[in-house]
Image (cartoon, rainbow, N blue to C red; front, side):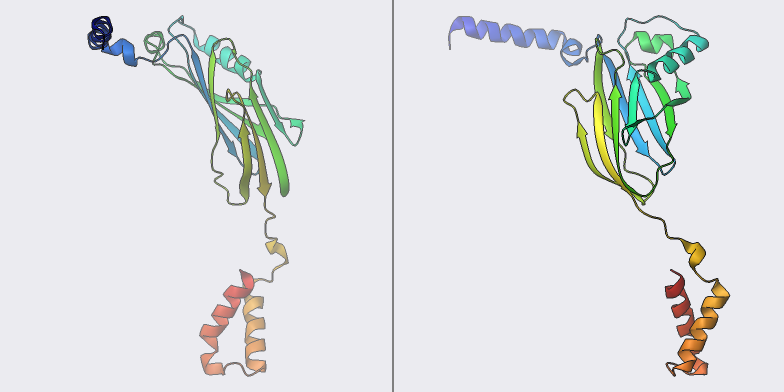
Amino acid sequence: MRRGTISALLCSIAILFAFPAAAGAHRLDEYLQATRLSLGLDRIVVEIDLTPGVDVAPISEAEARAYATRMLKEIVLDVDGQHQTLTLVSSRFPSFQEMSAGIGTIRIDARAVWPGGPGRHSLSYQNNHRPDLGAYLVNALLPKNRDIEITEQHRDFLQRGIRLTFNVKSPVDRSTLPPWPLAFGLGFTVLVGFGVVSRTSVAPRLIQFGLKYVF
């Protein structure tokens, strides 16, 4: 190895040891925007965490709410090709000191009312807020309701948008099921009438039959 190459390498190592914070610091000139989508049977919840750079200024509570409302207008949310209006639920802004240090995160919670029915559905989400500075992340959370199943999800390269395909199962219509007394009475008649069990042993098997019939 040449003497000049060795000198350059040693110089680079010396710089890294002299300025360790600069080597591992995150970029403060970006606007990180992380979105989480949650699907429900009657709504779609959108949670957005915004982490700006250090070029910020103090704002009032009214200005903060106005900013959150304006930001949501730059979000495009469609379900089955139909536009869904997002309503601001809450917003939380960190202190000016945190934001000016590049560690403060803005939290915006919103939701769209979606009276979805059983079947196959598609969802499209696109974040158009500050593309000049934005660095984006987007994810769909595992649905809490077991009747909803996400079958496909595709993000764009920049993660400004995501497309989901999901299924909503048909709920069991329990209004057509007989009430408990009728179910037990029917079970008793069938079991005794066909001689499946004797009257002395009918109780435990009748309970098992009733549970199976109703559920």
